[in-house]
Length: 137
Image 1: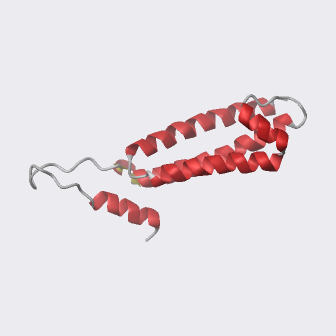
Image 2 (image 1 turned 90 degrees about the horizontal axis):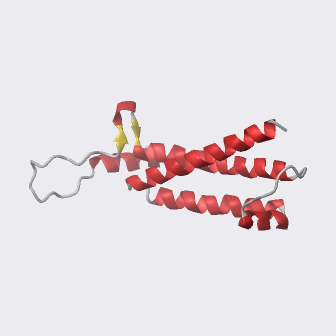
């Protein structure tokens, strides 16, 4: 049994003690049962996609900056890109990895899934915009 399956099983079987006795209804599970996907599994795939989109963002940004077609508007990334591609890659991949690990650590909270969904959607939009822009050059 993988860690994801074990965590999902623990989430499904765990129930907080109720003050009203055993007849109280169980709280809703953090799962997309209709599709057979648990919240933890969905969070895992969203975080993986977020990390991949972050790497794609870095590559597309670097490609756009190389011939001078664009400028970096984020001051922090502009500094690191000025220092060198490797420095920028270490910073960008590192900071997003820390965020991904933090969201994974909070995986039992529904807000982690909501945050991962929102961040992945934003990164997907940014990468799609960059890809269309680069293809139009």
